[in-house]
Image (cartoon, rainbow, N blue to C red; front, side, top):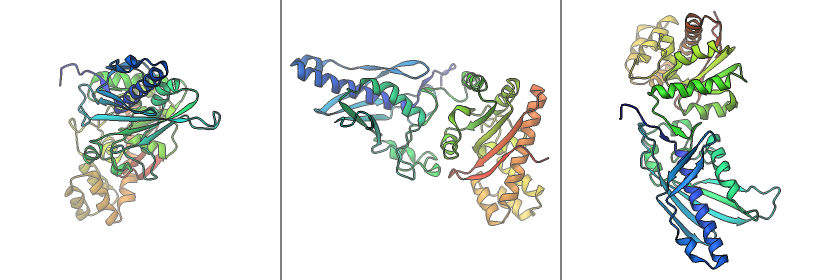
Length: 372
């Protein structure tokens, strides 16, 4: 990794670029056919300009081809920059197909579908989340002819295999990767520049929302959606929880709801406010201490310390009938320590709530503020 990590782009950007390239090439084909000017078809489409909603980008196109008079295929390769990302150089295919528009008022103009390697939710819906859908709309809708609708099928040939190396299935994303994220830019989460991006998001959102939701980790967004939390209140944090809690306090937020995987968030119960595992990873010891605090015996403590993950510890505690008490204790401690942290460094009172969920995206604890 370079000393100054370079930004790349998130997976939705390359999916949209592939679709836009295919759509432009298909439209060129139809125009050339009508004009009897086949030279236009031979023009090489080597890159595509994209509207990223908060900026723009020029994305290289690997291949593009018209398959028939209504269908075209575009291919890009994922490039997350210097970020550590298993999707690097992954091919993204977009198959676009025109259909006649029969009802201009009621008919859906742009339809997105999951092809091979793009995950689906438990209800069968394509795992294409709100930012990605807005990106498709901004870049494709203006190009669709008035007499047609467009269906886009995203195919990730390596997606099913890559998904086995993620926790997607545990979060209800089946059979592949998802088009998830809140920005087109992919910055290394460890880079200080990423903290500045998070701060910028927080500063803008706190202007209109005094009660914020800190979403820890990309998979937290799928949980936030399932809880019907408005995206306008969500602030991404990466591992920088302490710094952003203080920032929220300084900007007069009334409350922050911490929403994240329990194995990350419970670190705050131990006074660890940067949740990177490279800095500190005492989650099992923190859970074990909570077992003692709620009256658990030494066998329960040993059971927790004898497993490898926070989820395994949670399962052990369910078996022992201690899970609800232990995680309620941890959540209240997170709230108390976070509120004290903000008071210490920002000298303001701010309520901090907690939503803890497991690897399946199931909520373990949900509450606003500690009870003491």
